[in-house]
Image (cartoon, rainbow, N blue to C red; front, side, top):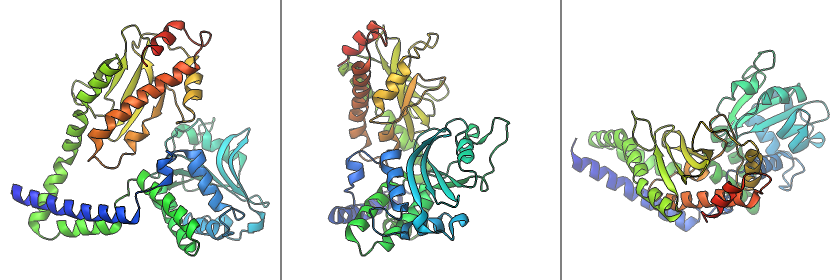
Length: 404
């Protein structure tokens, strides 16, 4: 492989990207109110609220049942083909003895669309089973970013019987189904500028979350550049072969800034990697911050290779006993920022959305250390502001207070 061919191809693609970046700057496409307000991953206040409002024939959009009918068509909901829109009731976070259902669209004839909306939250035990019991004849949608299957314990009854996929529940995705529906909604709203542009902003957020931010024209031009001749195809193949290695190198260049964060906050830093894979970025690798007399550490861990990470509170020494009283405090304290979880390996954790949602690596090294540092301070402040001597031991409070 001629290095000149690789350099030429990369320069050509760089020029294409620069051109479209300039177009984005002129059109203002990068400006997004959801992202600015840090609402892009909020399941309830952003996504469930937006979807429910669009589905409501009496919604503030003023388009009556146009968006609802487009949804029924896109999601192939046969039960609602002869819908009487004046009978429709739409609810967000419907609470009953069967649990809290994200979105319910129902009429007075017993027909219902039930949507379990998952951006990053984990499944709950028998979640879809319970919703099915609440609305026996519903069209039950399990909606995720990429059409992921629900956990087995969400769809299995106490008798061990599983709900049937594509019969008793339907997997749908933001990447394909919601995005296609929103594009139809925008087309229908073309004569209503404020509504149209709001839909455009929301569509762009969906594209960011599902990693589809490069517009089609840009993508097409890059493909044409690669296929222009056999040398370019070979060069592109060589670049693709080494791109994962390049990402690992970018991540591992964060090690020195992470050590500096520990020094700034007077915390020890330990990098946790497998002996066979001694690099940061592999699945289950991570790093944690603590002091010698801390019982707990603040832990960053890769939940998928390179592209997904979570942050939380874990034991420094795994032989210690977890203080269960701390769990509800962490849930309560971080609720304005993100939903939290706990399992046998963590006392409490959240998805590190700023890492998981980054869709460009060019500014990664410059921005990520500051984000990591702010996350640590945010978590420490949260715990320190909520704990009292009755809720947790005084030593932990004292230790937390010294870190800020």
